[in-house]
Length: 191
Image 1: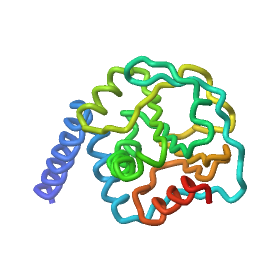
Image 2: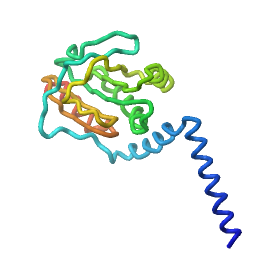
Image 3: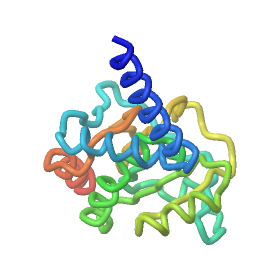
Image 4: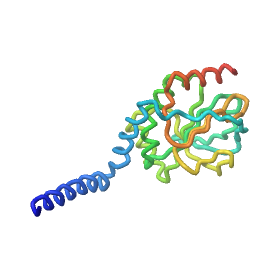
């Protein structure tokens, strides 16, 4: 009995040590994100299509990685994919490779606006560079209008050409699917 108890204690020490090393090394977000990517790859978690259309708001300012400020109203009349994310958010990290594949496929039809909510903007920039993501990344430079309810991240919105919110998804989702790409194509064609 004593031998079994010692073995269990040793197993717990090893397990807690592994978790401690992952956490202290700063790998926890990546590790959790990778696990969540596996879940996303199943296609179980799909984005939510808005049932009751809401008007989008264009009354805010963003800034790109090069320091250029942009009035969001410049995107009026276009289909816009907006994603609020942060480097410290495992679900954000999990869905970004899928969003990047969607971007590569749809960038000629859709505006992608990836808004980092990181306090350390250099960290966000380094993360994007390290991962090789090519989608445009921005930072907020004004308060966000109330109709973008971002109390949780990741949060994603898709705006149509008429300024209506067509997709509002709180939490991670798999976006690079046939049905979602079809929705974006229809929106870009004005359907």
